[in-house]
Length: 183
Image (cartoon, rainbow, N blue to C red; front, side):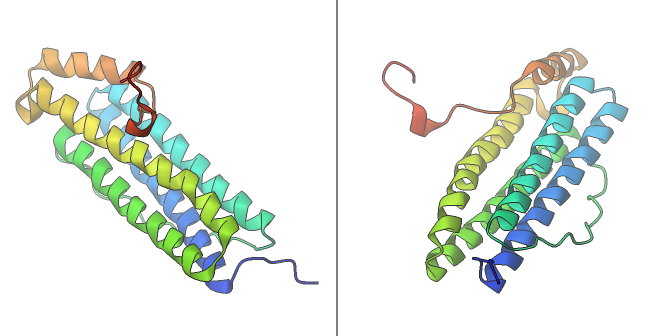
């Protein structure tokens, strides 16, 4: 008996996203190694934690496909991009990667809506919310670096930024959760 409750196209899209999340983990791991090599252990630690979060996202997709009776397919993962030229390029790379991931998430949401696959549409809402956090986190990284002086930041500013990111949580407050008492 066939127990798969996903269309063939949806199963492939979800498997592709699982692999995209694994690729994101490799990108952030690569950026973390670059930062570590440059002496930014706090930024590296932040990026390593973010890489683990992306791996966790891939597992969510894997489990969902399996729970719906499908079989996710692990594909070859492209190599991460070349090392960034600067912290600005690193943080911009994180942001661009997150925006690309958001676009991919939205495609799956659109597909679920078109197919009237309400289980998948509901599952994907967690990722829609997560991408708001991810893009905000990436924008905050770029903003913090700009405040520190960007590519012309002093060693002292970069040291402070590095230490700040080492202790920073991986998540950000969302505008949707703001209230008058908790802006």
